[in-house]
Image (cartoon, rainbow, N blue to C red; front, side):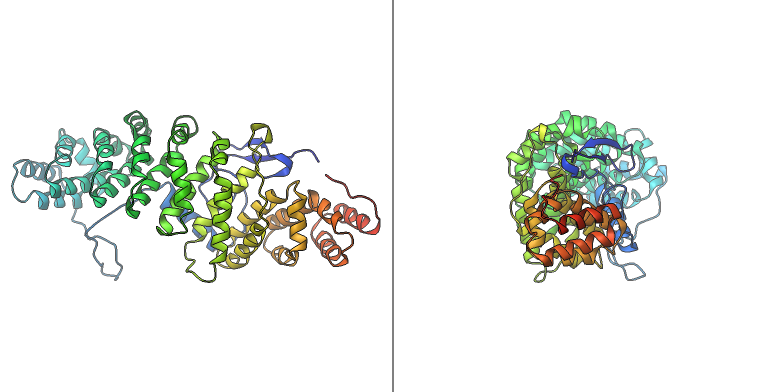
Length: 474
């Protein structure tokens, strides 16, 4: 059958048509956890997509040291002072400049005030305020420098673009300090950079010539988990920028970052879930850009991610799986999109390990109740694996996976489309031809078609089962 036209594009934006070979579906670059334009329903999956999108992908992150327990008994909520007036801000800055022994205490007071939007806006409007703060940020006194960094971090968390742009003079210092020896200080600089990159095109435009990609490439070799997670956060913000495909991703691909990202994603969670999740999503954004997937393929991204899925499937019942869906999802999407690459681009991907099918069915069974969106993600990959690939279609039959597939069809119409329509309209018919002497498999596929497909398709299968004629190959 001729290659079909599938819709692919950034979620929420215009959808352009891209040609996916043999009906392999290219997923969108959306920040949600489900393919753009389709959902499985269920409040749980929607809430998770919203949380991932709003809290970890494009929204800002805030690090605070002196978190206390509030009146409701919730940890991690700092009790801040009231907003500061302009006069109070000026007085604090004057006192800090005098070099008194209470500099750290004064900066702490300023930082707490900067948790309020009104104080942030007043602060950046005051002439010389940022110059004073950056001067303290570059101080040789470690405790003063750290507290000034926390003030900058509070400013970076502002939702006001003017506040982010007021921090522009600090970006070169933030990059320089990524090579420092203090893990806590480096982590703080990373999250500050990530927050600023989210808010302002001007900040990203300045960071690139200042060398943020080489700085991150050096930083990614850190042995510290906190630094690696922060780096993943910065990189994910840059990779989601509008200008990323033309101005950022080519620089990333020309660096050592991709090789290190693959190593960190496949580290069997030795460094914790957070590191693997961050860099899996980074790889997803790069793959979706289609800038140079040939390079990623040559670096072993396909085999690395397949082995990771096999490893995760093998420990599903042995290890804690909370949050594991946030790692599995981008890995599935990477493989699905790589399989959908146009062969003419030299990116043909072949996966021969049939164990991947078993892993996909394990994921679907395990996450069906709590995270049903992941079922759809698995089926997108299953669809692309079986598109024009009789080997995998045959494996679905011979490995006795068809009954499990039938059980999933009640989830939604989209699941039916991915699991049944695509399977039977593509290489599934070729696989079925190879097993015409197996009545049990013939009955299962006939049940699949008669229950969920259009009468015409059911008729096609019936005819194929009743005669010895060669089934259509497309």
